[in-house]
Image (tube, rainbow, N blue to C red; front, side, top):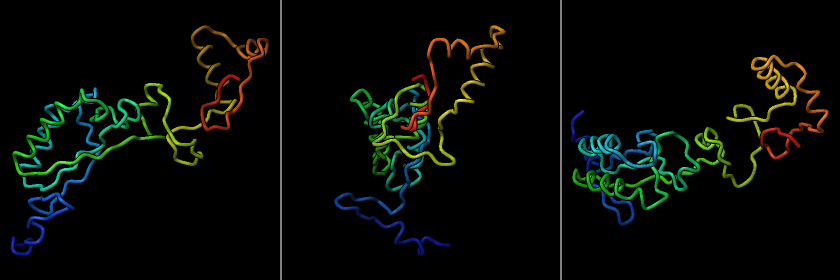
Length: 186
């Protein structure tokens, strides 16, 4: 296929007031190339710079964490939540502009699928507690699962077998929360 068939794709375009050199756009992705502390590092810069050098007209950097570290969905997510992240973002933009590409960023908060919040034990920021359904990333533990896990762990560590007598004697009971959170002591 010759370039004559791609003249429209390769011709300049406009999105509102934003002029782009061609109509080749790079969609945002969770590339997981940040520095692990929200900063844009050399690895991220080189990755996007290669695409700009290759002729992409608009590069949309993916999953820019707006409340970072809260709401992060990947371990090496780029953050936009504080001025401390500006130097890396500014350098990235400067480098992509040097190759003729325009730059945007996808603003993101992962909500109920903020896996980094789950891993770090942070509370999840969601507008309302979602209804659980098959395939969700988290689920309530049943009373039986709690008993089995506690007994297995305690028996392994200390050879104890009558954990529940302790809980019953001290008035500790377990119930399933209606809010969608984990079951816990009442």
